[in-house]
Structure formats: C-alpha cells, structure tokens
Image (tube, rainbow, N blue to C red):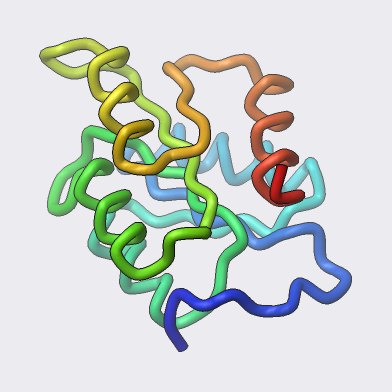
Length: 134
C-alpha cells in the first residue's frame, strides 16, 4: 500500500506523529487519542516514511529537527508522493530558531506549523481542520 487516499469509514482519523523526543511523541499521541483520533508514533522521518508505505494516514504531524531523516526532508518526500496528505510541522528550536525551520516547512507543504510548546486547543483545532479538509 502506498500514500494513496483510503475511505475513512467511521473512524475520526488516523494520524502519524513523527517526533524523536520520546516524551513529546507520547504526549502528542495521548492528546490525539483523548480527542478521539487513532494516533501512531514514530521516532524519525525514515521510520515514519516506512510506516506510510504500510498503512494509510489522514494526517502527518512531524517534528523538524530529528536524527536520520529530519522533518524538512520528510515533508519533501511525502509531497513528492502525495500532494494532498495534510501535514502539520512542529519545532522547538535549532541553531536558526524554530521560526526559520517552520517557515521552510510551510514552504515545503505543511498546512500548519507550531512552535513547541504549543497550546493544545489551537493544535487540536488545526488537526480538526486538516482531517476535515478545510
């Protein structure tokens, strides 16, 4: 199975969270699960892209600065295969500051960007909009 769309059926949405920080990954997955989404965590872009090849997702949430395959590379790889899969990028910093990386993420095709730490309700609103296709 590839990055193609699949019928959502009765579920609210399947979300892949790509985040190398184990605690942050768990927190985002838990937040999404409590909001009714099916959330799966992955620790880097390479593993996240591999998961995308095995099952469909309705939304990708990716950190930017990660080992192996960082977030900008991951967004670029997803966009090469699927132009319509929604992406939310998050970043806590880096040498250039999160604003620079998040601006690039938007340029590469992320629908929404958030600087960590983010407000849960604003984040969940963006998730809802992505899942609804708004």
